[in-house]
Figure 1: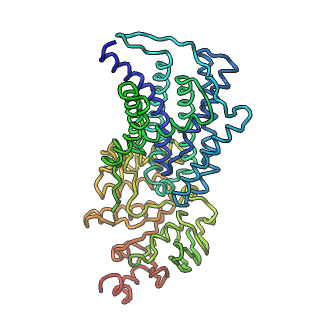
Figure 2: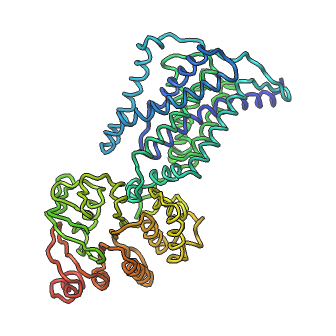
Figure 3: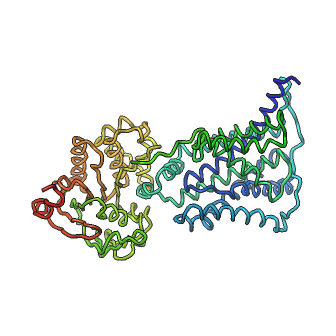
Length: 299
Length: 234
């Protein structure tokens, strides 16, 4: 395998990992955009989503059809979980100092992780996630696995749907309005609470899908599995410009590619350090992120 | 139509509004004038439910607004054009108007209302697809008013519509306000430009550091010694 093909191979692996980060980063960025909260429990939604997928696939067996069923059950379930999380944990703190909600988010994260550990149906031990038998297609000497194709298809499909919702539906326009100016949105008669709930639902559904995809690529599920992807997706969101939806997608892809290239050509142990190093560099050079809008004081 | 009784509002420990009482009758333009920091904007925010009320009563068309959430207050027919316009700068002009129509379900009437808005504000019609943040100040103020008109208000609270606009545009905006009144919508106008406000208002109230100190017929107030000295520059 030539160097060029190696790079191409790693790019494909990176883009596939990156599209999972992107899906997860979208939830961070949308929630931040609308309530200015970094929802640190977002990665744990990925874990719950993966476990629901796991139970569905164990029960029904793995076929392309049941995989779709797994998405269709896991995504609404996590959407509901996201809505409840916001209603119970974050809404009472909406007018409190921002740090309170942030600490609460960390608490929710611990609650979900350790809750999953003590829950008899989940428990602390890792389990093997059921996957379709591996098939690899070869193109120009570069291998693309079936899982990767599924990841690309689902991620891109969901991003197109999200793009449609945000730009062309009434609720999506209201999301943009509320994230720009909550007070003015009330004055338009917009039910801001409902828009916030919807945002959590949307973000959590994407995280659930990311969970199933992540577990299909790295076929293992356990209660702490959401932490690392959660952190990486957070970096991706900051990288792209927190609050910016195209930024989250771009940030996810960049981070995925950077991480796999680092793994492939530098050192697999250094890959995470490189990802976090990237965050530091971005925060120093461009604090608002690649597509972020610098905060300017209104006059 | 709107009845405010003994309204008390606090910002933390600061007593921002002290037992103010006033009324707006259907069909009127009532103006609330006063210096910077007198509590004019605070009064409007309290009425719209954007800040909590500590004591007193706000009644709109017989409904006690203290128990109504802010978006429901709009649905009752109380519109509010906020200070500094606060249009959604990231949305297009059309999307801003759609936000005003967010809660409306009367599709047929809605279509007519859009047409009416575009006849009244031809400049907005040319710019429906433009991002609202790129409009000029005067156009943004028009959009802010148009957007609120889309909520179908019976009463509009208008906060400093002249702020930051060139004199010619101020004139244009005030002509629009008079048109809106003529079309049957009641207006509660807050202005720093007391002279201008008194010239179009029926009645006026004067706020001073959170207290109502004067009230009366707008023309009479405009001629009164006290108001001229304090607010009209002699």
